[in-house]
Amino acid sequence: MADIQRLSLNQATVQNWSVKEAVDGCVRHGIPSIALWRHKIHEAGLQQSAQHVRDAGLHVSSVCRGGMFVAPSAAERKERIMDNFRAVEEAKELNADSLVMVVGASTEVPIADARQMVADGLAELVPYAREQGVKIGLEPLHPMYAGDRSVLNTIDQSLAMAAPYAADEVGLILDVFHIWWDPTVFEQIQRAAGRIFGFHACDWLVPLPDTLLGRGVMGDGVIDNHALRLAVDAAGYNGPIEVEIFNQALWDTPGDDVLNKVVERFTALV
Image 1: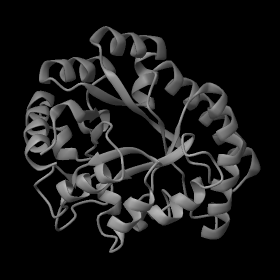
Image 2 (image 1 turned 120 degrees about the vertical axis):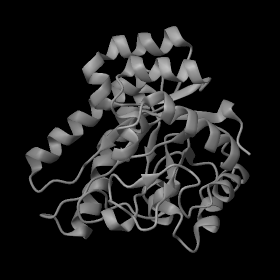
Image 3 (image 1 turned 180 degrees about the vertical axis):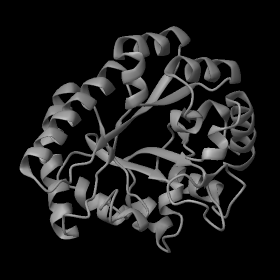
Image 4 (image 1 turned 90 degrees about the horizontal axis):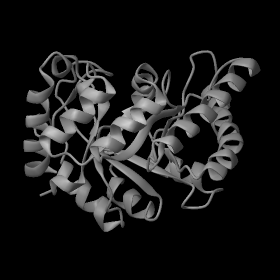
């Protein structure tokens, strides 16, 4: 199963911890990489966050998140672009492998228009990211989020969105929670070879207790994390594997207990 040297703690899994607490937790549990969320970075300060990571000798697998390009007014869309520029600068300072994109959606914008806004937003953002040496990782989200969170919903669609750009500039972040259901998932993962910038492990609980905060720890649901990880490996991705779990019950559990379980399940099931 998965080597702990590939494990990255996505900070969302220990939502109540600060950057320093999450970094220190990784050190205690032998986790070599971390993915940081921007609101936590802002709480701690960008320079201080980078210092915490450097002092601990951790690798930053990603910064979460940029995107949210979709908005009903031109002024709002412009502000979203400017915020993405700031996100690029934060990812650069942290020397992150990629900046994760959750591209956005709006109940006020028809889905076809929203998808065009995403394409237009990337056309503005990618040249700046290229200048800064930051890779943009498009994360397709489960179709249940298409109305309010992301109009990018399949690997195939994400590859088409990335196609105008070089394979080392714009790639995909593959999260099992969002892709496991697709009957063509293994073929699509193979098609994504050369553009896979990240892989996320978690589980789909049945019944799903909450669409946003209802993810499970690997082994508590129905996703075959190991099979999907082998497929990603076969497509040439050998980088960090983030464990990203949005779950209120988990957040209410002491962080070290969470990390004990994460390490145990990761090494046994991923």
